Length: 298
Image (cartoon, rainbow, N blue to C red; front, side, top):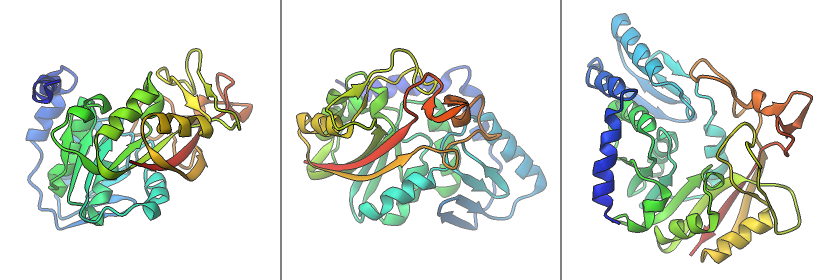
């Protein structure tokens, strides 16, 4: 696979009719002096800005909806994302050390986690996500932060062919979207340096058996969910892919403190995805979303 050709082809996606106006807006961002950047639960950009420029920035940010990951505060504009992503980041943070490491975030969305990782002093951070919208949201935020983070409009399937390997890979909320989870895990392994480590989270079902739920149609109104394994099945998948030292870090029920509808998204969110009479079930009658967070190494 020629990765450079793939990159070149995907750059054309930024010219799609729904994305091109956003890219043009990026070229016309007001020239505002950033005085301070805070990379905490809320990623904050501080500085002096006129009311006119603030209104212009908010209009541009609203054009980029939906904002799934965050939150961000750009001057006085609070981008209240659907996910309070700091809950997941803070859950994982005690388990990793990124000092001077080469790090990849697979399915990086708009880069929230990568911006948070800057405080951990990694050697480099590369994000993989094929979404032209998320790339545009990232470029919007990074126009103020001006980090050296690299955003590649690539997927996990391109990782084995990428020009470099990584010490640490994060793959958060991706595996259940893949129709072949073992092949996906093999691709992640091929992206790691010797002694590299993978941090992964995925939906799981409670069972002592080595089984997986295969939703017939949608799961929690999400159309592209293929397999929801038990933890034993997930461990087997990782072993088959060549990982060792499978460690369960945390388990968490997805709740409305973490995922909910805001003015910064379109459509529905978790409240609409669950059975209105029994929040332990999805609207389709499956067990409600629960996530397991694991660490594996090679």
